[in-house]
Length: 263
Length: 254
Image 1 (cartoon, each protein chain N blue to C red):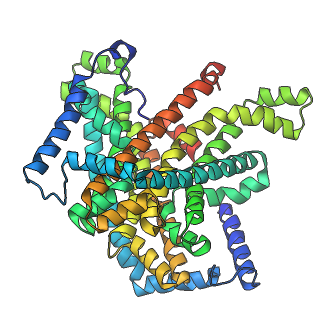
Image 2: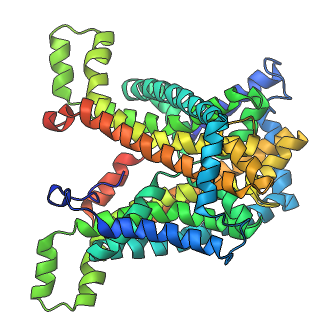
Image 3: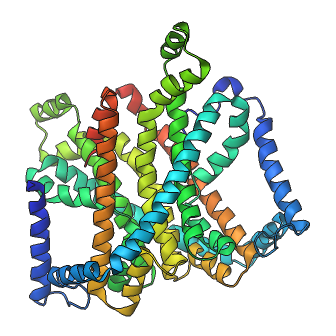
């Protein structure tokens, strides 16, 4: 996520001792202060207890079940929001009437905190997965619409004219010229949408229950099972890191033509 | 002003589907009922009181987060050692869904102001760090050399060259942080609070007073919209000198 912060090639081989030291130091201080009872165990369980709990949750399958449920919701919503957002963005960019109609709604919806809408989604779609998936889609759709719209508006006119003069129809113009030209920008907004989808899923589960990582997290907190709280937060952190790395790798792999093409 | 026409159309369609019985008004209260509830909430002071609480939490977290974020970001750009120490923690928490920490903060600080402000603070901190760092490290060397050659003191180089060069990035971060501040404040209120607009929305939902629930949500949407536009306006005012910043925000405008 953090551009330009990663070490340049020259330093790649160097072991970042200070980084290792700061993480290790943090863990040691945490473990020591918990063991020495400087802080109540309820507030800060020792690292070893957290790792132990993490192992137990993994072994009895609750963690895997919660994780799959949450990720399933997050990705369903993300897919729905991305597909719908790309279509809407393209339509807005190519059609004056749709643009006029949708623009104020998008402008109003984009900065709004989508989590505030959760009671409406519960009212309409119940407290099971559907309401969460749709809320995630609703949260992800706005950045995707705006990204696609801006990308489609700035497609090089020469590409369009060349394709048209070579006899492209409306659909093939969309499918073979406009959409591919938008891929890099769409992907950039997708990268923004992934964490939004995760946050929305976890928060919705915390607020509305219905199983998943967020629901288990909030139940553990209510029953003061601190090791579980910490273990689940660590897993969420891991999920965030892994997904971000995966998306970046995908981008480097499949969209490496973008910069060379000067899109 | 012409941009409001589609919104009026939208409300008209909404009114039509409800009053024609196409959609049960239990599920979707008509805009007229929502408007009445809206007026009632404002005259009754329910919204004003809770909205003020939420804005205080979001604002306090945003201010502290922004101040600390700019400081940490600048320090990271300034000192390689500091960066090495802080980097794994910043990089690690950057991808963490910040709302996951709300239960933990509720455990530590109880329910109410501190939990909400802490969550907002953390969510605002990271985009500010990253953007400030980026802004400072992309300062053209020529500007720094020129300032030094003209005898600018070290401290002055920071305030007048590095930080000023980072200002457009800092404002970009601030806009992201502003969005986060509302999301986190409302999430924290829904999960661990007894007041605030997030709690109010949730309460109306549980009581089944849906016209009031819609009115409160509409209120949040309007406030978030004007806060965002207000920040854009200030950005454009302050960064009028910065050609690309203005163009950048124009482009990003929906």
